[in-house]
Length: 590
Image (cartoon, rainbow, N blue to C red; front, top):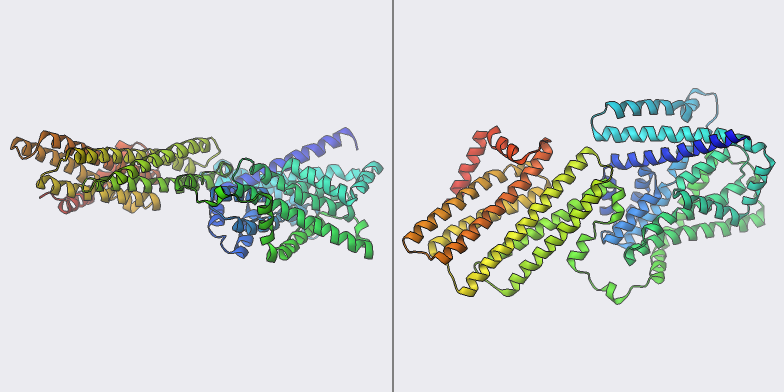
């Protein structure tokens, strides 16, 4: 084996690792975070958690990615540690699917269908199809699928190149001697562990082993310890991910580590004890790529079957390693608990990260609404406790805006689909509007406080008019929050007519106040208070309009709020005017 063969092997390895990365990224984009969201929501049943962990890992082709997401979910308080255990068990099974794909390089035979299964036969078809989709496809999903195809083709080409380059190694006595050293169970495990820890992918390290197996120089006695070590080495990614995380997140990473150590050590002890008694003859036979895939899969399925009934012990071990203190037992404050769903680990899965941002933004919207409605109540019945609550909610909304804004900026630097990029832009606009609504809640609270401290009251007529105005504002805020939460475009079209009615009420109430002022039925001081309230109401409705229009623009793929607002009212002028007329009748002033 000369220097050029070594360079070919290194090049094949580089293509293999790059192909695996491209394919994994494509799969994550194609799923759009939906698989991860399912994983988050459907893990209350432990058996379901195992199946979902296996399914998600099989699709995204990375147990490390699944486990890192689980650590993020636990760190955010979204998932309990007991739920995480099932997902981690399943992830180890799902990771074995990669080895079966890679084992196709070892398919031999003259049969047409067997030849068709060989990567050298179908990889070029996948590659050209992927390139066509990538260059001609207009939708992001098509481009993601193209990335998966191209990544898989590159991966398989790298595997074939690597396998071809290492075949001559079987003729080198030195190489065979090195492999015999690795047949020592402890040394073999360490090699598998170190290689997997360095490249942080059990799938990739299994692929390297399968490529070596094609040379015919690797025996079962060498491969089995290396496979066992690879199972432990894959824990490194999750352990690194848990650094600086909450105690529960570190426990989730420990569950993954303990599970892999326990199953590996248990297997090695039992297997080699039996070998000492029965002396397994197959250990000296050469192993092929399919044999590696079979051992990897059988080992992990058997481990889940054995450990599943006693999986609670893994949780117990994690708590023994990182004990629960009194401070942790106390319930955390809602603000801190909720905002933690924006975990930095999710940034590597942009689709999931964006979904988490939406969830946080919905919470922010509800807090803004709660603060506004509480401030409005103070106009009728003022209390310091309620006023303090309005301030607390406004600070909470500010906290959300800062956290969400910073997180969305970080997310924008990731490779997003065009749709995700537009949704991110809309979220940034909307959280700004919700923050301004909470600012207006503070202004309304201060007006209520001034009225209370100075013992000021509106005239009966002004109270009636303000009550109608208040109902209209509450309706537009309720509608907007619902539109934002459910992304209901039909309901979003109801916001603009209501905003127009609120503009009319604002102008009409101010006009009527001036008339009362001239007749001496109202004081100038109360006039200022009424004007401030009316202005704040009208501006709240403006922000609601902005939010609804942003969502409608996203659906229509148009931008420019003013132009879109004009087109919305003109596009279906009769329907728009009819809705405005009906709302005018509903909120007519006495």
